[in-house]
Length: 116
Length: 113
Image (cartoon, rainbow over the protein chains, first blue to last red):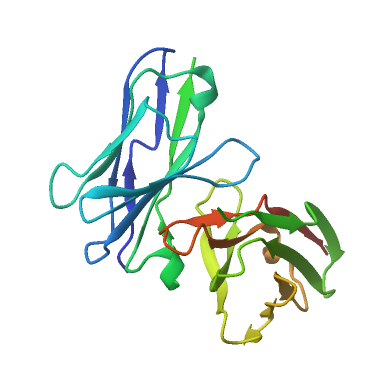
């Protein structure tokens, strides 16, 4: 069964450093997402991406965040200058259709980011 | 944008009992309401979903009901088992024109044997 894959599974970084989290969505999916989950809290929407551009972003997704689909398979989340409060599990997800069109989200296993 | 409220935040039941988790949403145009289960340290996974043109959907021990007038939907788990212990999240589309799902705060269900 096809799966969303994410790397790295865990990254430890120093405050102020840049981090890139990588995702390979399911190959025939059209919509890609990043969510984050601070330990013990809810799954928070960051950004959605469709047709090679951001289609929606939350207020969490400020100027220090960016997303890119550098080739036909990878989907990356970059955090430019990490802060302590960026420590969380970051989930990539993909969907064949959008959330508003009844699209199931298929989540990756997550990348745990620890900022020291 | 959509606001999704979920209750209760924790729920403890005995094995075999039923469990009910309720969510309310704010956008009357929302048309899709999934429920995700997240086991400890794992990714969220869809367990059941409902679209706005039906009021109830069942899948074995799991059911979801939708009340569009009151803007709430509920997850019902019957004959609970210890393996049902997990965090359950409801979700709804963030906006009619948007593409994202917005999640509730989650309910930690504990089933004791």
